[in-house]
Amino acid sequence: MDEEFDEQLLRGRVYGAELDEDLGPEPGRVYRELVGGPLDGQLLDVTDWDADMLECGAALITNLGRYGGGGRAHYEPRPGDPDRWDWAGDTA
Image 1: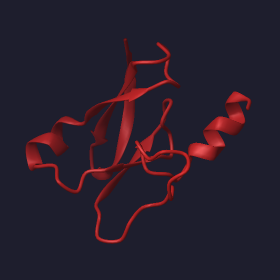
Image 2 (image 1 turned 120 degrees about the vertical axis):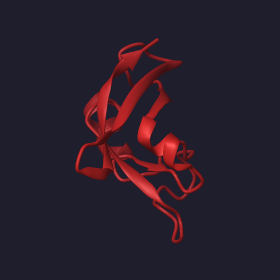
Image 3 (image 1 turned 90 degrees about the vertical axis):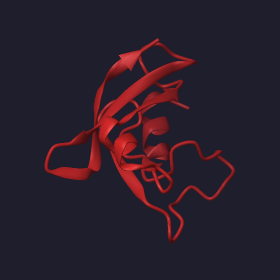
Image 4 (image 1 turned 135 degrees about the horizontal axis):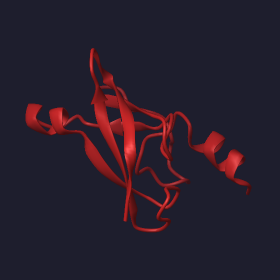
């Protein structure tokens, strides 16, 4: 698969779901949309997160980022729109 096709395949799916699982969100769960960066368009399940965790954002493991396998993509809540988390960069 090429990189553009990979990105389209992942849009709208839940971060961390296996490719053979149902890729969409589940009723009764709480999600944040990831915007920009390698996980753009994916949904992060934050159902069991407390307020402090939601305020901090997340460093999510991804093979699609700048550092390849095991690298992390950092996402932070968007000011004024906490349902969307913006990409803040990648780390190894």
